[in-house]
Image (spheres, rainbow, N blue to C red):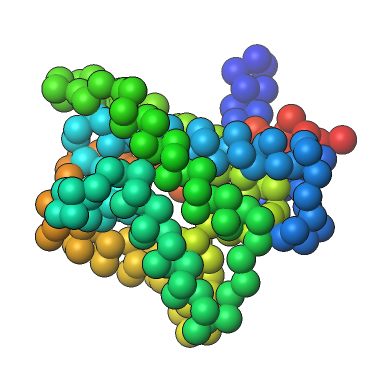
Length: 222
């Protein structure tokens, strides 16, 4: 019975749950909501840094960020920030409007990634690299469940995905796949690290987010 209860508690959630900190619109701010948003975004960046420092392959957007950072001789943080800014500019012709969470995503994740890659050791052992990658994927899932339930606007990349979907009518999953394959190919061509970590991220990130949303839904259920 106890294991069944645990499985039920961890069952993936298919929708974004309403929580005590969920906003009514993208600029509906209060201290609790902002704190959870900032915490989620910071954990997201640290999780991404764990995957980067696993040294077995980055998540798709970090492949691109690493490739750009190596070619322009800039930090991962600045590279991530620049990519997010360019993606946000791409929202303009798509008529997508940012929220407080969108702009916070732009800044905080870039800072957190730079903090993470500066502190976390680069792994030189494949097994420890896998542990780092899995830990990072889990952290990104938890972080996403926190900031997305704030309802203060999607991150630049997610907003691009949904805006293209809304304009084209192409399924969200196909739009996301097309964007991320393009990003990985471009990043790999620039020298970004692609490997098992990239495959693990692609295969597990959706389930990680879904499980985390399920936990949040159950912890905040009235």
